[in-house]
Image (cartoon, rainbow, N blue to C red; front, side, top):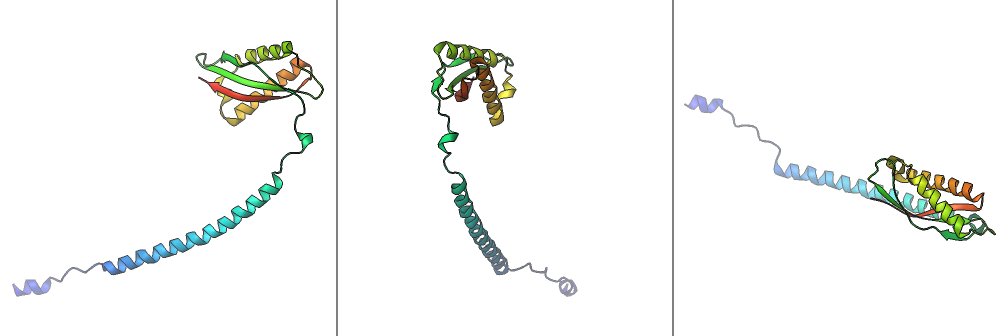
Length: 162
């Protein structure tokens, strides 16, 4: 029996708990220092970007803003072409060129033209910001054709799909 006891050696011990805790603490300090350093760098870059943005994003000059009168259109409620069970409510307004007056009959004609156009629209065409911009551009072109150039801009105030 003594021969068996002598032949078996105790299993090797793993790293001690103190060494493991020490390694974790050192790695945590390195990560915190790196985060602090990069955070400082990003903060400086953010401040510089904010300063340049305020310099370049000044209010537009008065000549860039439309000077015509804004004519609100009656809300348009219609369904789209595909799928037909989706209803659309559009609230928009038109801006007349400076010195031009938009009679109520012309505003009603433009509203009817917008409704006829919206009935031909596929719902997939209205997805995302690009779809909304394309819709506004299309409506603006139609309004300019109907008014023979009296309309300067079309604003979409609300577009709700149900």
